[in-house]
Image (cartoon, rainbow, N blue to C red; front, side, top):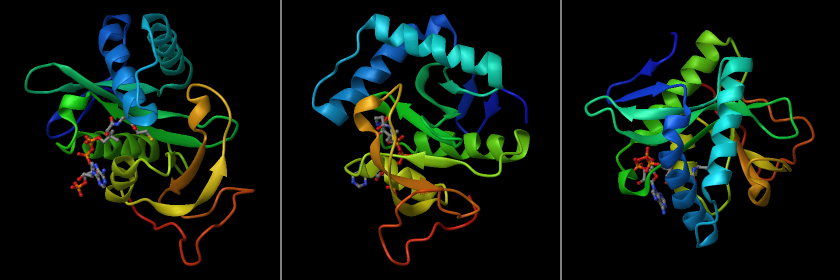
Length: 191
Ligand SMILES: CC(C)(COP(=O)(O)OP(=O)(O)OC[C@H]1O[C@@H](n2cnc3c(N)ncnc32)[C@H](O)[C@@H]1OP(=O)(O)O)[C@@H](O)C(=O)NCCC(=O)NCCS
């Protein structure tokens, strides 16, 4: 399963500096949702993009550019990354606002998770989100993940939103040191 990852409607490929405009738009759409206003400027977006490009080079995975197969338009970013201050690998996704609600995040996240397990032979993959981010939680559920508890992470690239419930993966073991917050909320196996 080498890159690019091809799904029914999408192609996930390593990002390049040509994706800068979309990367900025993705950040601003997400920030509007999270904070009520866009915050990133083009320099912030460039640093993030360069960081993902370096991750791809160094680790063989990153947040990838997501294109529509039908048109080649880049409509989002999705992929795998190191969860800040932990040994865990997280799946992440963001799409341009005008393309929300079409199932793209779920399709891209599933492909990213499959790449992580089948190509990278990862033991597990986690995902985190703000408690208020219902769409993101739903994407996780549709990928076979379920809520296991609340944890705190500090670090880049999203320092302000590291107090988040944590969802994971096909093995279901809670993260070390993580508070189990709901009885009976053990993670479900099988993405
Ligand atoms: C989160 C995000 C990626 C979802 O993208 P998407 O392509 O719309 O996701 P999908 O269409 O695959 O699935 C969204 C699901 O959430 C549901 N949903 C959307 N808004 C919701 C809300 N406010 N409350 C409950 N469910 C909601 C949708 O109905 C859909 O579920 P369904 O298929 O059962 O109907 C998109 O909203 C986004 O880019 N947000 C900004 C970046 C972000 O927050 N990324 C995640 C960081 S953890």
